[in-house]
Length: 390
Image (tube, rainbow, N blue to C red; front, top):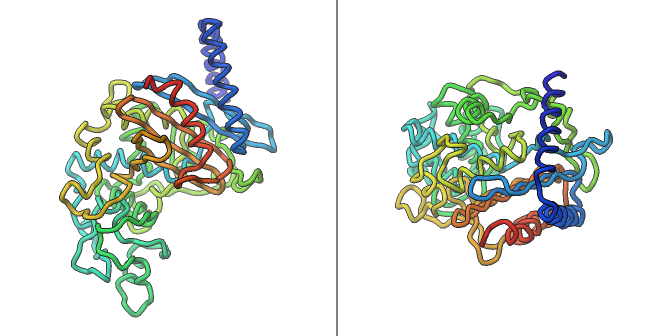
């Protein structure tokens, strides 16, 4: 309670100082932008949401909207944690690629070598599955389901009489794009295999602690768990924050059972998510601290089939990073979308202008256009002209 009181006291004092320092004309312009953003949130049926804009690594605009808990009438603010669904993959990629830079992982190595059992597509048993394929969604893995243990799931995959060959598409690994949460989850399992740590502990030590970011796959481990946003679908509660707090997370390395972690379970605040996106947009640093090398960022954004390695087919994804030409017409932007029980999280950035856009919600209209939630597109298109400098 004392920590929470001090946090809110500091935030109130900071807000007062910032407000008093803003010139009236600038303040009026911000209020006009707030009205536009609020209207878009309202039209997009957002229950609660936060939008953050950064430019050249600096915060230039943020707006919090609606309720994180409708029944208790608790508003969204800058301390609210959102469960960011598949955007988890983009955040996880930072640690995965750190391990690649250090030589602990290889993008084109047969992933079977990280386990003590083979993982292959039974239709193409001589073609290795690789981390590059998993991160570009070209691994040929499907979403047909699995067992509690990866080894059991794999043994069923390889049993031609079991009917489990449908865990794979009948295409050569690396040749065809097919989004796969199963494949994405394997990446966290591989990281645990080489590090000897749970993925949560790994990402906390390598990323969150160094940047003073309060985020976790374990809801109960957050500094202020009361600030977690509940999830709403069509305005109705679909997942309470208390349910997340009641879930258990094993803080030990278990590659055979932790093959769903990196699919979409991360809790994080919108401003901290924006800082990580700014590192991917810029030169790989946050507040002067390097996360990834420039060369790694180039590889991450690149179409993987152009690199002459284990991916031969086209994919809209580089390495857990989508290349999008539809959300902002006339522009190539990078990022990721996450959808979870009626909520959407969207992160997009443009390296050429240093523009970073983050939208986190705990419930909104899930109507999509070209695969992207319309609410996020409307916010992106409204704010880009105001803050991109383009």
